[in-house]
Each structure stands twice: as structure tokens, then as C-alpha cells.
Image (cartoon, rainbow, N blue to C red; front, side):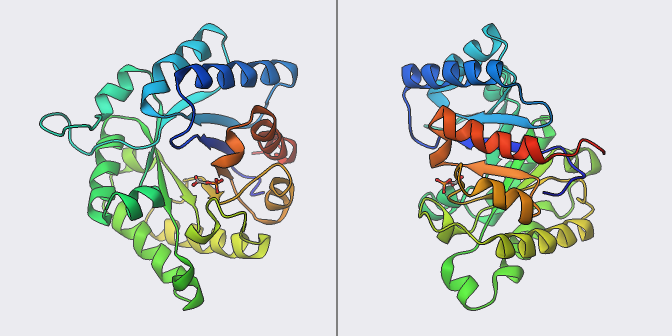
Length: 261
Ligand code: PGA
């Protein structure tokens, strides 16, 4: 764990759980957090759009100490974009964070670097926290081009952002070959990439951004990734769908944070 920054753990529910199931998971998380309070870690849940309203209501009524994120947003303010959702609609629902450029959006829904960059700008202009997702495919790593690939993704999204916007940015490094595959990156691979990303961020005047790891994180591998991976937290997919495994990942971060900032 990088001990300088407050850890951040985000549960990305992807296209899972209808609003009733989402309420149920929200309630379970609330109970676990009441029994064992999380002291040093920011916890964020990213449900599907149609669950946002029910999850924010339960979080508010039960005072569950989590923030709510959206998994995606359209870069435009409003207008003829059938099927899309705007940042202002999400803000109105008290959404505080938005994931941008998840590899599934980039690969399956043709989200280009330009659209990622435009989306990051609309999100930060609205004062909402942005989680920029970056990651390389297996072939890119095999060709030893992963560092250059990540640097290019970061530069394309972050270059020229104003200071106020830069303060709202966090990064999630998710190697595509590790997402949903059970093939987590090793602590050495994660730690090397964290160092690389931090140096690129420093050049882009974004050194304050937290850098998370994502890709088959679970309750078993989280402790060693926290101790040796030098991460500021995690973006968790599959393991965030069960209250116990998600909270155990959160606790791994919380236990390790030394609180001496
Ligand atoms: P996973 O997904 O934890 O299921 O690998 C991570 C992500 O895609 O955010």
C-alpha cells in the first residue's frame, strides 16, 4: 500500500443485479459496515443506471458510509442521444463519481480515446469525481509495450486539464487480461505499473491522483496486493457482488492504512 493517500475501493457491479437485488446488497453492506466500521477508506458502489435511485435512497436512509458512482456517462450535456445518460442527470441523483473508459466500454462499445477525453472533461466540469480506467491487452504486454500504451492512454485523457479538474481525477489500472479471468496481475507487475503510472501522472501535473488496481481482485489476493502492490485501492468487479467478499477487500485496505498522512 502506498501509505500517503487515503485508500479508495470501488465496487463495479457491471450489468448485474436488478433494483431489488441491488437494494438487498446495499442493505447487507450497511449491516457489515455497522458491525465493523471502515475508518480510513473511501468506499464507492457503482450499480447499473436503473439501480442508482434505489441504492442512493437506501444509503441515505440507513446512513451507510459509501458514495455512489455511475459506470459510464455520455460526454454531451443533453439532446438527441437515444439511450444515453448525462452528467447532470447523474448529479441530480447524488452520484458523486463516474467511471470513464472502462475497457469493456472501449472494446465492446467503441469508446475511443477522444470520447474518453471529452467525457472526462464533462464530468470534471460538473465537479463530479472521475475514475479514468486504463489497461493493456495481453498482446501489448507480451510485446513489452504496456508502459508506452498506458502512458499514451493517460496523456490522451489528461493533457491540458485545468487544475480544478485534475483534483477530481483518480486512475484505475486494469490490465484487460486480468479482468474477470481469475488471472490477477502479480504484486510485482502491479507495483511496477503503479510506479510507472505515478511518474507519468507527475509529468501531467496529476501527481495527486489516487491509482487503483483492478482485475480479478478478491478477498484472498487483496491483502498481498495491498502489502506489495503499492496501490491506493481497488476497482473490484465480480467480488463486489457479494457483501462479505467486497467488505473483506475494503478491510484489507483499511487495516493497512497507517493514518499518518
Ligand atoms: P473483475 O472486474 O474484478 O471481475 O476482474 C474488474 C473490473 O472490470 O472493474
